[in-house]
Amino acid sequence: MTFPIAAVGIFFAIALVYDVRHRIIPNRLTVAMALSGVLYHLLPGPGGHGLFFTVTGALTGGCLLIVPFLLGGMGGGDVKLMAGGGAWLGAEATVHLFAFGAFAGALIALAMMAVRQTAGDWRGVYHDSLSFLLTGKRTVTVSRGQTFPYSIALVAGLVAYAVFGRVF
Image 1 (cartoon, one colour):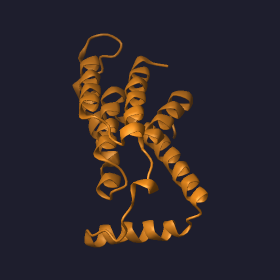
Image 2 (cartoon, helix red, strand yellow; image 1 turned 180 degrees about the vertical axis):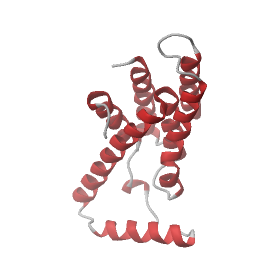
Image 3 (cartoon, one colour; image 1 turned 60 degrees about the horizontal axis):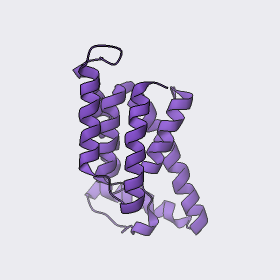
Image 4 (cartoon, helix red, strand yellow; image 1 turned 180 degrees about the horizontal axis):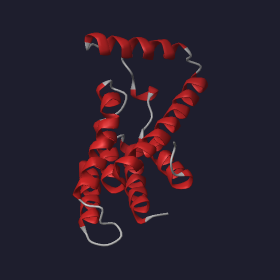
């Protein structure tokens, strides 16, 4: 395991605790994560990939989750957490982390729907997403009990990335 993956793991673990307990990821955590990632890559030595590496990683992480955020599928803290992870890991690794995290998130959502026996949720999610993309208006109101802290999926994605590496 490399130092950047371990550092992201520590930040993600702290975020997970906050997210599960309070359903919020503090800005001070995501800012500290992003800034420390930038500083790490600006230092000479094994981590010193430079400013371009860390900024493109942060932008990639944020951009990958901005659409789900705009659709109401996650909070802004999740987007900032992924951007902070990108600052540490760079763009390529962040894409792989995103893929593993999205897969984990889909499995968690499917499990939640199976437990609640709400197969009709798929039609509602599809209709709501299509409506939002076409009109900018939501058709479904989602309660907090129907969601889960996405940091769980991001932590699972990071573990999978650390174990398996590249997705494709």
